[in-house]
Amino acid sequence: MTDADITDAAPGDPEAWHAAALDAFRQGRLAEAVAWAQAAVSRVPDRAAWWRNLCTIAERHGNHAMALAAAERAVALAPSDPDLWHALALVQYRLGAPEASAASARAALHRDADHAGAHVALAEALLLQGEFATGWDEYEWRYRLPGAGPSRPPLTCAAWDGTPLPKEPPAAAQSGRLLLVADQGYGDAIQFARYIPWAAARCGAVSLAAAPELTPLLAPLLPPGAVLAGWEAVLARGERYAAWAPLSGLPRLHGTRGDTIPATVPYLSAEPGRVVAWRAQLDALASHLAPHPAPRSVRRVGLVWAGRPTHPNDANRSAPAAAMAPLAAVPGVALVSLQQGAAAAEAAAIAPSLPALGGAIDDFATLAAVISALDLLITVDSAPAHVAGALGCPVWVLLPYGPDWRWLRDRADTPWYPTARLFRPPAPRDWTGLMAGVAAALRRWAAACPRSGLGRTTSQFPTQEARVSKIIRTEPNPILSKAVEFHGFVYLQGMTARDPGKDIKGQTAEVLEEIDAALETHGTDKTRLLTAQIWLKDIKDRPAMNELWAAWLPEGGAPVRACVQAELADPRLLVEIMVTACK
Image 1 (tube, one colour):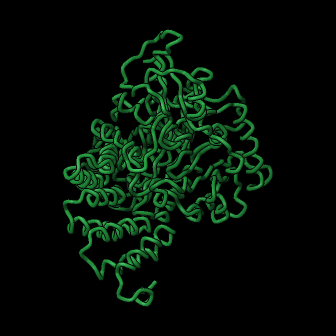
Image 2 (cartoon, one colour):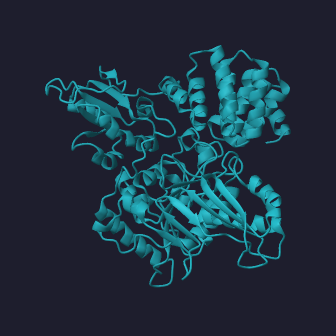
Image 3 (tube, helix red, strand yellow):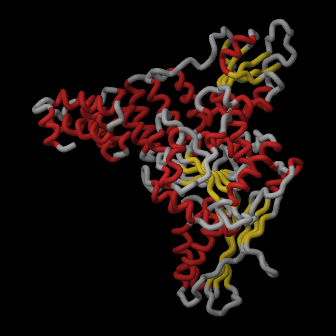
């Protein structure tokens, strides 16, 4: 829509333009809404509320720079309005600036101490930075947000404060029974289900109310009959409860900090018989994508590119299916869609005749079985990522630029799920840039990682201990391996330059590239380095080598190191580096 279109439709009437912007926004016509809103503020530039609306519209449309400028203009016009500071905090968070977001949220709270949105924005900014102590307390304001539904059934019991309840309550009174509620989204419920054993150990008995789609997956965490499908089932049971707590509130009651996240993974499991059946089906599908019979080396990789459309950040976290197309060109990989909902119809944009299993997945127990039959799941930040992580299955999570708080900042790993690897885009909604890196990583992974899971019987599914204890050797030969992984540690061979004719800086740069690639193959990176050994042909090259080394290392992430002069096997080589990293 052009300026001429706007003035022809409602000449000289900015009020009508602003109303048209809101109407177009509500109907999802975002480009049109941006045009109307810009026209309105250009004619009447002193209305803070109009600038705030332009911020919201532009952010949803994906123009984050415009959204930020509009929010800053709104605050400048009406600095005493807490709603405007809250809007600024939200767009700053989306732009990956949690410190600025926290400052803006605090500015809103300075003007209105009971502003629930600002408290939640502050919580998410703090939690993203790993400031759990204050973050969990602020997160409790989520139930006071406008439009937030009730967090529990209409019961009279008190909120649980985390203190132990009687272990042997009188049968009639049920005085020690705790009701847990799987609140928030599916992913949240799965993530925080890890706290159920901790809560159960402190109470006489525990019941869990969860969505019907979740109950088959979560039921094994509690005694038979203790996991109830929805609030109706809770009320129909007629039990009396001493206290209740939402699953998402358990980290605060537990006192969780970055180094005390319950890390017993897997804490969920799939039924072995169903996994075997799904593996057979996947093998049959793969046989149509590879020469008959399907090579045993083909890896089965599941894809999910979109989350629930009603999620408030879905426009940023869900990818267009076409963005996944580079993955279809990776050799040795058989892709299969696990996508559900309307987005499943976009599968052909990834590859013609892409096998689709989403329609056969009717609950999370089925999803768990499918994921357990795969070699890898690649998914946007949605519930399947949490299922795979809770199962201890390999999963690559594609994050939005301003990620959800649980994934923390600038990490390729997560303390919540040790088998997850995180991919972060270079800019907001830059799925092309993100997927280029994912495709390159998938190519290295497919070339280096042995096919897992083929031919296992129901009694051969590995425990977490067995997974961790397996020795994985990359590119072994009669003399050495390029890398060895054991118990979550990755040991690399001494890396040397591909071109020994280069000078010390050229060779060092190539060595560091080789280290990056080898670590990426094993699901880790240079932020997880523990030790380094460096051999120089001439110790006088140490300053030049150190210049590149220091620039390559992440800030504050230097490993312990030894650097010595040594005679290298090839006289043309000037430097050799060997490192150890954890996952």
